[in-house]
Image (cartoon, rainbow, N blue to C red; front, side, top):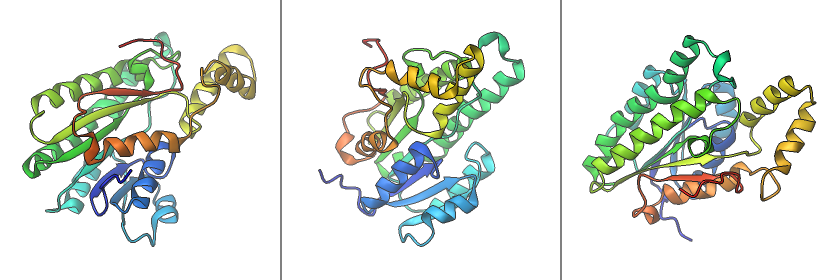
Length: 256
């Protein structure tokens, strides 16, 4: 399928690892222009320096100064799409958390996403076109053990995105969420480490047990995830907005 995104401009945060890296690289392979953002400048340069259609921004996307820099980089150009993506909070049970953990999770999961959305959605609306994909977690459909901070605050992101998608449905701008389950990315390791601490099992045993519970029988790969994201970032997805799509190998049992 021709995704029709050649020379279109996209923003991808968290572009040096996991889902962000896979999506950014896939967009570049399709001929898109991509502003890639990550905290580690050395890794960012290692991956993207010399790629004609890649523009590099080193910074923490959850920091409002970085969002201001990003707005300056886009300038008066039309922004066609954006991948809203950053790491999650630590793995904890409810009674292990402190109020500071909850304040930090609010900043890390929700607040900056509201800020970046309010920065770029009006520009997309003015252009009459835009695609935004938020990377959250399958926990928005079925809570995940030891992830109370993520389970709770990511639901707030879903509420915000769903509401906004309804408010601007006729604008040509779509907003959708992908909730990943267990994928072969560095982020999943924190769950296996936490479970190993709780059970006394080795990391390898915990991982093997977890993989055995996935209906398709394996971890997902970041490239699998990226293929869905690219379609949602393309003109072909114009009739899909306000949706939360789960990519988890069949783990979530919910029907809605």
